[in-house]
Length: 298
Ligand code: ADP
Ligand code: MG
Image 1 (cartoon, rainbow, N blue to C red):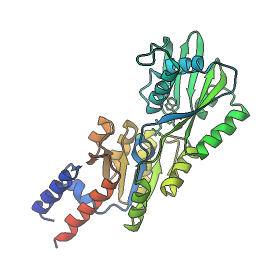
Image 2 (cartoon, rainbow, N blue to C red; image 1 turned 135 degrees about the vertical axis):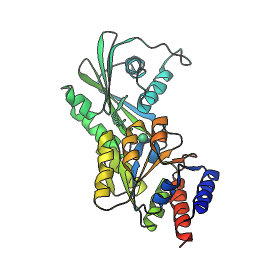
Image 3 (cartoon, helix red, strand yellow; image 1 turned 60 degrees about the horizontal axis):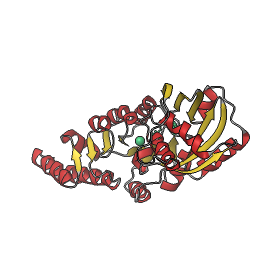
Image 4 (tube, protein in one colour; image 1 turned 90 degrees about the horizontal axis):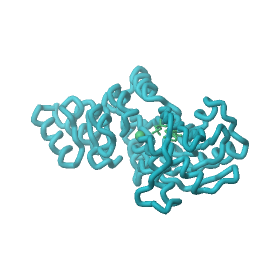
């Protein structure tokens, strides 16, 4: 393509909310034959909400949520925000609640949080966080976790003083049109893969809903990038689509990194293309634009 054609292509992209950072990004996009999608905030809406609570011990729900929120209010994670938001409903001071102070707060990336609240040890997070802390997960909690994951929700366990007291089910639905985008990509001979830090149960259920066959769950940020490199080594030209800090190594590693506009600044900086409208359809817009630009001339 001539420099003019590239300029036109980039301009058309910009007018449609697809920000292409340079000619190289536009050129690479037409060769893409495999796309790695992050789950949370990319394929899903990214605004998780608590949809169910189960207590395994006798405890007043408001007291339970106060302890959990006091720990989670210190975390930036979207799941933590969902939990704190839900916990507000149990309070008189709902508008601007003052939570009890948390001591020794620790955030364990990809697993959850720990803190001491009112002299009690609160641990909030996934299965492996409990196991890493030598906390036994009772059979009824395991069963409920499995049911939650089957429904494509994320189950969060809460232990108080080393005993699993409750489980929260959190739902983060698919973005509208996500399923159609995956199906159109298939017809364009582009393979779709999903990677996520979430557990395999939930990840597989979401993948089934959206129509993706290959799933990598329980991944750390470096593992997302390794997966991209592995696909490249086996001959694919790979695009990565993500929104989070944890996606940025993979966005950099990919032949074309695409960031969701509503995502974190770090992801947007790491990407070659930014989907300003945060629509998944624009993954196709970008590839189409590149295909048109680079098949017009010669
Ligand atoms: P994702 O890639 O889906 O954004 P993360 O790698 O951030 O996932 O987290 C993986 C899992 O760790 C979450 O699905 C959740 O089970 C658990 N987790 C992480 N942070 C928190 C938190 N602040 N509170 C509770 N659970 C958490
Ligand atoms: Mg994400």
